[in-house]
Amino acid sequence: MLPKADQTWTIFEAAHLLNRAGFGGSPSDIRNFHGLGREKAVESLVSPAEPLDAFPLPEWSSDEQVAEDYKKLIAGRQALRQQSRGLSPEKAEMAKREAQRAVRREYREREAEARTWWFRRMLTTEAPLREKMTLFWHDHFATSVQKVKQTALVVRQNDLFRRHAFGSFRDLTQAILMDPAMTLYLDTQSSKKGMPNENFAREVMELFTLGEGNYSEQDIREAARAFTGYQINRATGTVTHNKKQWDGSNKTIFGKTAPYDGKGVIDLIFTKKETARFMAGKLWEFFVYEKPNAAALDALAEVFQQADFRTGPLLREIFLSREFYAASSIRSQIKCPVQYSVGLLKQLEISTPPAGFPITSGEQLGQVLFMPPNVAGWDWGQAWINTNTLLTRYNLAGYLTKGAGETEKVMASEKVRMPGMKDTPKRAARGWDGPDYEKIAPRPLRENPENLVDSLIFRFFQGPLPEKARGPLVEYAIAKKGAIFTNKETAELCHLMLSTPYYQLY
Image 1 (cartoon, one colour):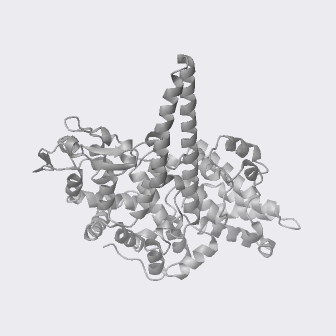
Image 2 (cartoon, rainbow, N blue to C red):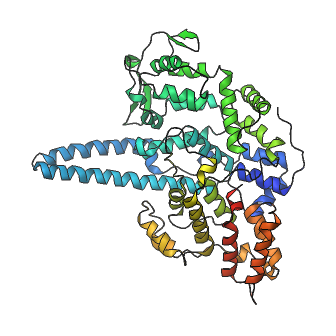
Image 3 (cartoon, rainbow, N blue to C red):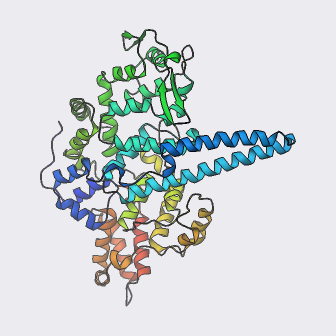
């Protein structure tokens, strides 16, 4: 086990935990969280009271609707074939293209709806670690709707990640074997006896469980034969194992020989000590910092194995460890776009984001939900920041803090290409007025610019800033203060704070 942190903790440590194990919060959120004490605060994250179905999934992702949509798709194709019989080849081709455009339009609308749905859940949930783990699994078992096509399947996969947020990693990996979105993404449905496809066998070892160097090419080839026969029923959106297409002969994997099927291979993978070490290290790097020392990694792997690969006990160990609150951990990570956007809204106490913001921010900052770039997921750390994305962060912060006025043209033009926002018309986005500054910066606080700056520093940075950064902010506030420190001036001060390198870290 790792050395534990003290029972007592500071409000800055509480803020650090809420940031890393969730998406941060307002000053009052942090004070309430700090009031729980360290152990109860961690327990509230690992064992949340909020039920899993607190946010109903989109109706079109239900079993019934998936079946109904499939029938509709087949009927549409049949009708198109009949109509095309009396048309010239050119007109038949035009009718076909129009039908395809209609299907793609519906896909795009559902994709946008799904992204908005999850973004709002992350913003308003009372179980933030569960959503953070859902984001972690989404990156770990990366699957893109761009290839899967059926948005309902990636939404169901998202729900699978949520339900396994704190449970057995082994059970989740077994569930991924039978997951229709992953089956389509890695072409597992085309893997048959005599024609094994190595995609899933390779990724399950390299990216999902063991890590590079802990298996051989022969292990992959043999495992690929075991993963044959898994087929998807598109009418129901389910995966079954067709024994007629399965290679039932003996395979030798990790030096052991048996007529393994896919489930058997995954069970075999979890007998290797490298699996616990690989996943413990990946969770540590996601929540704490990169490259933990070997002793810490050994301790974490042991906790993970003793917990039968349940992530809840491992996360509890991490968040109660002394090292999690060390200087090397606090504000050492670059915020990913989701962390940046959701966290900023929470700090500004905006529970209903402007129309289009959940989608626009992801697209512009480089993290589109349900669309990781490849099976390895997103590149993290410094990869999130470049000249363009940094400037975009500053612009988005300006839009949120100042309202739509100065940046209305930019944001409005982006809304035109944002589909699926039926419940938030474009006009509403143009009329975005910004946060409630009477609440964020009460008038009495504005009488003293230094106190105002310190209050906003706690809100946005949740820890002290070096004087070389704080000093210019105080000077700016003093220069801005006239007879009355207006909301507009407060917004400008907030925007200045958010346009610093310090704000990109957490």
